[in-house]
Image (cartoon, rainbow, N blue to C red; front, side):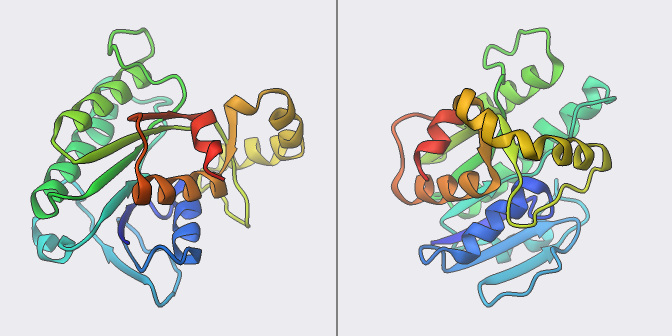
Length: 220
């Protein structure tokens, strides 16, 4: 399986990239982002593209891939709805439309989150916009499209978030992860589990389009 990965420098994307490079089922990974991952691997090829909403300059290099793992995202904290919509909804759909055009048989997996609002009518701004993004992705026409909704994600294998506040948050909660896993396993997962679940879902497919945290953990 040949995979295109967006967001490989983020915490979730780092985990997904690691599992792809380790997997015998993945033969090639094309990482596309605003910055390089800093990694070197025989399977890995990278394209640094400042404007991810316009992939026309690199469109020819996107052909022949089986799946896209879209892990790109930002926190909504302190953002206006218009700005969050632009970087969450508009960017994601622009990428998805291009990939569908050049790879009509591609599987598309989008990382959303627990609490995403499929009705698009709730009070939470981020949940409404994520829900709208999910809904539109499912309408585009991919043969298989899946919405991943992880809850709390524990970074493993030396993976770190680039956001200082989040880094402190994860450092504090890391010792409590075993307790969370024992008490509320339906709400916690790891970067390792998310990556492995994506690979298995892309390879084999599943009946449901929305995979909640408990569904993601079943694949490990």
